[in-house]
Image (cartoon, rainbow, N blue to C red; front, side):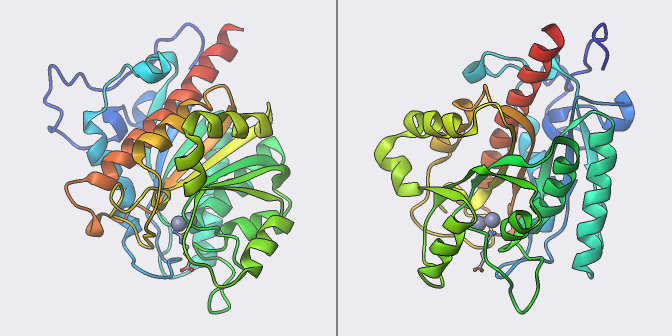
Length: 322
Ligand SMILES: N=C(N)NCCCC(=O)O
Ligand SMILES: [Zn+2]
Ligand SMILES: [Zn+2]
């Protein structure tokens, strides 16, 4: 979008019922309707990398359906994200469910194309495997990026059944490939049983800091966000949000649930506390609607993507006006 064009916003839900018509994220226009976008919301319906319950291939569309209720003004960040920048729904990246290596390459190539247009990516998964090709693509553009990884799990394990590309291994691969800025890597919301203490030792050696879900409970969202912001500084930042960072009470619809997680309120508040960070792209993954109830998980995921989109839109507008 050039500076003198007005972004095309969502369908007006006070005129056309919000439950009518096909779902795009937040009822935004499709990317092919606007040509190019500042923020492209894209689905990646891929879940061949999961170690337990499948179904995250349906996550993106469940998030789109749940996002019909989002409204255009975000009071928590005092911003109208879809007026500040052109946000559009880029549809789904069609990937091979039977060949993980090919799928990973397809995701990277599609992300290259979208980032090449100047858009930032707000990706809706899919399982966590997809973070690796997305990070590869982002790093081609920005160099090694800071990473905030919200998840119950470390996802820095080595292999499963000898497979390198799985939803439990993307961030180890990313560190090995040198595409992350190892001065600014954090897991947030970590909890639950591990394979052994070595998991933590290995993870620390890769450069990750850990904010556990218990830390968030004890210290509060504001203090945690302050600490994360200081660590990130003005580095280009990628945020990857595995919806299982939330307690199963707040996100039952996911493949590898762990008790004792943060609330959706805590997650949203931490994100709002990061609004000044240079967020270059983000993903929300691991929504598996078959295990969901009353859209609890997909509603939480839609609001999560909305906060992330708001952060990006505010920065795009600020840069444009600078
Ligand atoms: N990325 C997610 N959601 N889970 C990873 C769990 C890996 C395991 O089964 O040990
Ligand atoms: Zn997880
Ligand atoms: Zn994960």
